[in-house]
Length: 78
Figure 1 (tube, rainbow, N blue to C red):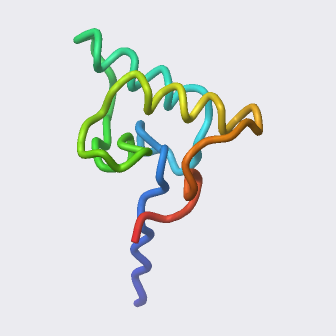
Figure 2 (figure 1 turned 180 degrees about the vertical axis):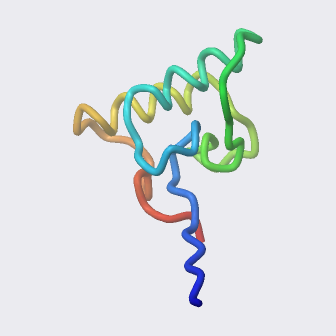
């Protein structure tokens, strides 16, 4: 039996395997101390500054709209 462990994607804050608007929402809900089912803080820190802030949610939104944002969103975290 072979097991494949996939690295999380940068921006996949909710850990569902894709970067979509719900990831920005998960960040917003976490920052507002509202419940989320799951949250990956490392994946949520898309700008790599060591903190998860509203800027990270904004960068996910910008990436989804094909606007300038940090490199690597949607790619496996290495």
